[in-house]
Length: 304
Image 1 (cartoon, one colour):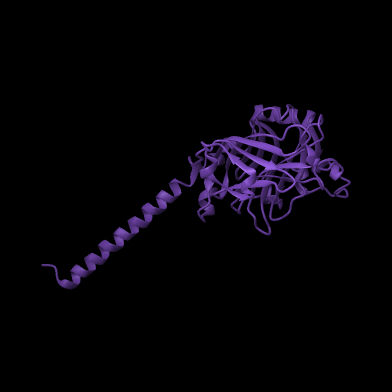
Image 2 (cartoon, helix red, strand yellow):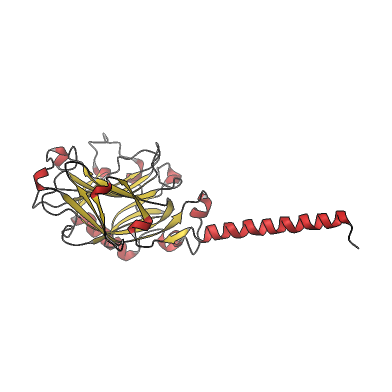
């Protein structure tokens, strides 16, 4: 015979067991959904951050245009924040005369001491190439600009621009060609984005105070409106749920942390050297005048 007190204890034990397993399953579901491959629908994965009247999205949500005119530019951002992963987006840049026009595609934590990983496409006068500038912010510090000319006309068709961000390195890629590597040398005192979750943002804006020939070429509004187009994209990343340790861990879902991604492959290194030899036009690590012969520490450390 079970006494009343014993029955109460059993019920409490059963209740605690149910709660424990409920919480366990809830956490398991949360973690299992933390690595996401995006839907490919701009309406579902992003929200418009400014000037909705200057954003035009296709009916199926798979393509989006941003417009810049004398009234406004425009932008959009991901609904989720991420800590490590890979982001790919097809972009067709502003054709014709685009001096002073900037298209930005980047990750940012939006904190005072923000982390940020930037692609910035700097417009030019007609007949001159658009310049691709990349930059890395770590704990609020940047000054890590690199610039290249592209080996194709980025206004004629869509091309894929990618960011691979893991615990080892950040790799900027154009059509899967690595154009820049920023390595994690945190153990040597070099800043690296590794703790702050970041959202993916895209914007089209007036940068004519600096973007083209140091601000000498201003936007010619008679050539506008200026339109940049965004096509297929893929975000495969760790969604921020408040657990940095989970996003930093090596697992099948966090594939970007696997050992094979801790450096460039031999074929990637060959392509990287090709870009550096023929298309690099500015590297902060070669700018002794700017840094008064005291280049940042990472400039003397290996890239892979």
